[in-house]
Length: 276
View 1 (spheres, rainbow, N blue to C red):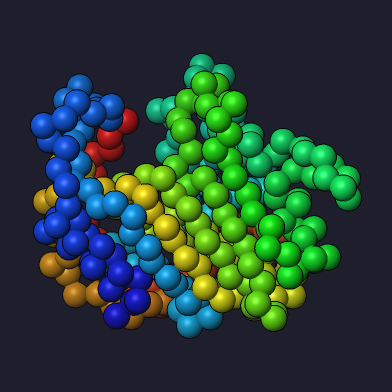
View 2: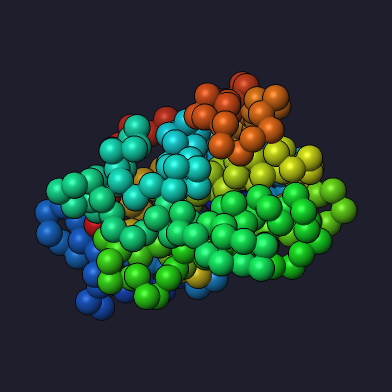
């Protein structure tokens, strides 16, 4: 059984059995038919994944690694805010007529800031510190820029990464203000596990822990039967994660640089509705 499956089941069961329902409250998200999209939620879930032991992909349902990495590279490598730079259509609902999501996600990572050592954007500053000052306790990114929130089509959900090196091991904390457990939980976990692998490899480090902090972990009302169906399945063992070990430049990775061997997973017989 994948350890990611264990945590996913534990989290979802806790939300369903002990969570708070907002069904009587006025909420922002809606379903495509215009009905309010209510949730059951838990406050502050913290999960720890040891990337040196196992890649944290669930088998209870499929997580599409290449599509997840495509979005990750769109944000962290291309530093783009235009959906035309994505191979998937997952951001189309938040894009304007030009394909822009405003000053969100990749845009924030690409803005240059002045440091004592010169100008860097947030990604290049992380790369610089991991190479030249790995013992720093200041290696972090934050894309929740209050000054620009009014120009974002969607406020960032996964908004902050903190990197920390212990000896020759790279650890990281992902902070997330809000998470749709069914559609986004393992998607984000896999993305940022890949990011830690990328950062470690190009800086000659080993991967350690990824700690995922979720402030508002929720399951939408129309997702509950699907989650219950998923939880009834018997998980498989985790697959083997592979990446192109010849790449030493962060900006040379592509979606084809990562793959699974022996990934067995359960399929869903229901289309998942998406709240907006």
